[in-house]
Figure (cartoon, rainbow, N blue to C red):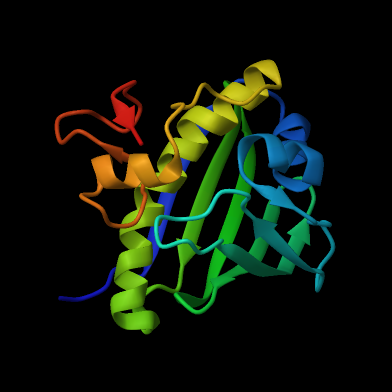
Length: 184
């Protein structure tokens, strides 16, 4: 089975581009809607996204990154790697002012070269990024708060949603991506 190489999501937020850019580049704001981080928006800067809750296998996943492009408030790109499971991929954010507010295009690429690990990561992150953009970031931009989350542990969510495998934000087959039927 071939491994898809890129995930792309586009979302329009009613907020101005400067507010959306800040949500993508300020470490304190990223910690509310994405993950804790020591991110600094400077080309060449290395940083880490990290979690406080282990995955079902007991591991804590840290995502090691390096800023490769930073053109405020239009474009941000950084590498994304979570060894030993996934080698380096690329996350690119493109922002554009539109009459409705700000259009955000996220492209996460580089999965194909990682074989089975790339396929597994693609499957998890395709839905994960969709939920983060449509729920977490949208709520944060609207209210400054984290979207409501299930109270179960990651291990319980993983066992229920993925049959004991890795956790992923998933949706029912009939639910569109912007549906409230997304579940952990």
